[in-house]
Length: 277
Ligand SMILES: COc1ccc(C(=O)Nc2ccccc2)cc1NC(=O)CCSCc1cnc2[nH]ccc2c1
Image (tube, rainbow, N blue to C red; front, side, top):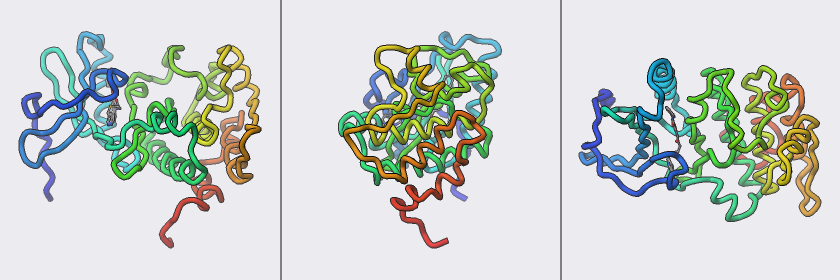
C-alpha cells in the first residue's frame, strides 16, 4: 500500500535549510530528506533540558501520539518524531505559503470572500479536531499557516500540548481571543473554539480583534465579559457576516452556533463553492 514503515529517523537523514519563523516557533528549520523521494518538511527542535523530565515527558509522548493520528487538509501534519540524547525532533509539515498573520498585516484586512473561505476551512478543521476530542484553545492569526495552494493550516499545537485542562494562562499571549468563561476562570469546553472563530472572523475583516483595548488589559477583559461588540464605522460589513459573528460571540457557550451550522451559514455558502451533495 506504499505505506512506508515508521522507520527510525535521525538528523543525518536530512539536509538542513533555512530557519523558519526566525525563533518564533522555537528552533524550526526547513529541511529536506537526503534520500529519494526528497521530502521537504519543517523540523522542530525541543531541548529535553527545557522540558522538565519525569511526568511531563509522558504527557508529551501521549500528545504527540494523538497528533500523529490527526489527518485533515487544514491541520498541519505531525509526521513523526525522533530524539538524540539531548533533543526531541518533531517532523512537521512545511506550509509553502508561510504565516497567515503576515498576509493580514500586509493587507491590513481580508475581503469577505477570502475571509469566508478561511473561516470555512477553520470550522471544518475544528469540527474534525473536536470529533477527536482535541480542543485547540489557542486560535489566532499567529498560529495559522498557508499551504502551497493558499489553503489555511492550523499550525501551532505547541500550546495545546502544554495544556492540560487546568493550565495556567501565561499572560504573555494575547487575551483578545479568550472567551468570557476563561476570562472568568470558569470551566471550559470545546465551545471556547467557537468563540475564537468569531473573534478570528472579525479580525480578518476589520484588521483588529473585536474587544481589543490597546491601553488596558483590564479593559479588554471587561469588554470580553460584557461581549461589548462594536462594528467598525469606516467599513460596511455585510448583514450576513454580522449575523454569523454575533451567533459565535455569545456569552453563554451553549448558545453559540454549532460549527456544523456555521459551515452552512449563508455567509459561508455565498463565498464557497460546494460540489452538489
Ligand atoms: C502539528 O504542528 C505542531 C505540533 C506540535 C508542536 C509542538 O511544539 N509540540 C510540543 C511543544 C512542546 C513540547 C512537546 C511538543 C508544534 C507544532 N507546530 C508548530 O510549531 C507550527 C510552526 S513550525 C512549522 C512550520 C511549517 N511551515 C512553515 N512555513 C513557514 C513557517 C513554517 C513553520
